[in-house]
Length: 113
Image (cartoon, rainbow, N blue to C red; front, side):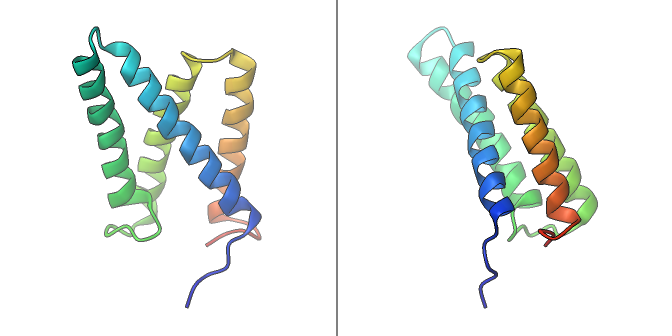
């Protein structure tokens, strides 16, 4: 049976997309050539995606709250740090607040899973 999608799920999805896109753009800027930039994107986003898939996603094979929270924090903070290199600080602060609130609501409150 499918669980229903709530408003926080949509916010979390948007935050995750912003984080992964920010990581990709940051990684692209680290290379000096198209090849090195492409490899950097594959390495950084690939590592983040593997960590997310193994420890954080709803179908993660490792289903421990501590690892879920820990790796969620690692990937989200890395994404916010990457975002900080791309946009102004007030935008990063706003995204960080939304990220923190939506992440907490995953575990407690009316939107918890």
